[in-house]
Length: 444
Image (cartoon, rainbow, N blue to C red; front, side, top):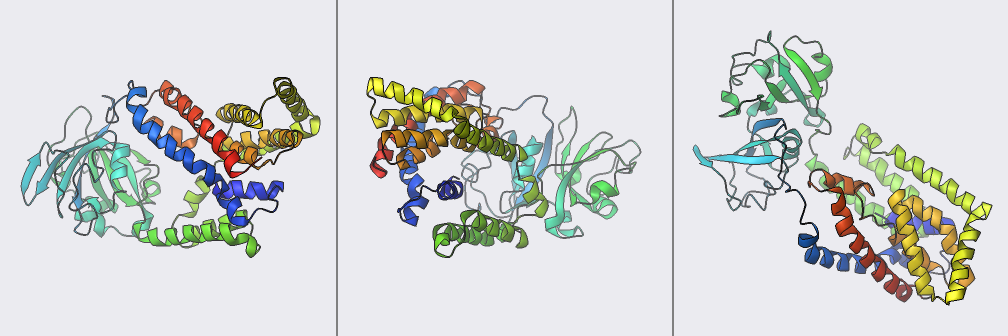
């Protein structure tokens, strides 16, 4: 994730010097790859011991609202011939595969080594988020032909939750006989009944007052039925648009184009930021991603923190704060006669601590003037320090340190201290590898 921003940063701050373009582009990888290798080995060896207190990934609150849903394995699905485990159907948190119906025969208590076959009907019981995730598994479709008969394009579809009201004509009707698609241009793909287990196929379920239905429908359903007396409550499920698998090759092609432009952009006068923007706009124009999704992906808080950090970095440089810090560091170095590699380790620690408090990029901006002045006073090349500063932005020690840490925090059932327990020694390892490798790649 550092490729574009680090390369652009090096160019913007003017320290590229006589180094070839390919080295500037892949320089961070020359240091990062050994860190990745050692880090993976460390996690494999120690994670079972250091994460001994974590909550099992499939642990679910007893109060969670669970749905019953059925999915059918398409004949051309890539998971045909795979086991339940290999297909990833046992790894979704809060989801339980209750049965498989195959050629009219029901297989209960499905084991992880059961082989999936085409046209298998999979019965799941799970929380809403996991039911939504099922729609993203390629080759799995809701086990009802009603979704294929809905009006409108599949790309405009979304999931909506509704609660059946006492005045609804759906009460005491089975899903199959309710003419739901004809009435509402929507298909019922899952049912939740508070305090009771819903047994049988979706089509055979007899609806009751207060049942929560998960619908596959068009984006205008919410507006069209906002005041419909048939439902007590209507709410759209966030991020439930279907995955556009038919755009996968286009997206891969645009990714390759972006990497090519980043590598060769200097030869055709295309700055890295422009290369990224070109490919991002093409992603929208080719419908790999919707415009609204692209806009919602822009994290204003991160942008504001980076902007503020740039100002703070400039203030540190112009106010003399950076000079004061460097003077203190250099005074200590002169008294203790510290080697440049020891100073490199000190800078890594300071930058890493800052990155836990603010964003990694912002921490790098704050530390950059200190790094440059330190290298000047030591009369050495700044490149080893600059690339180390990039690596020092790693955030393993807290769940709030980086977006991906938060993404796995809840679904993984982790505790706050799990990050410190594994992240602190991992950070120390990465720092040690970086301090050793950086001077070898970029000599002082």
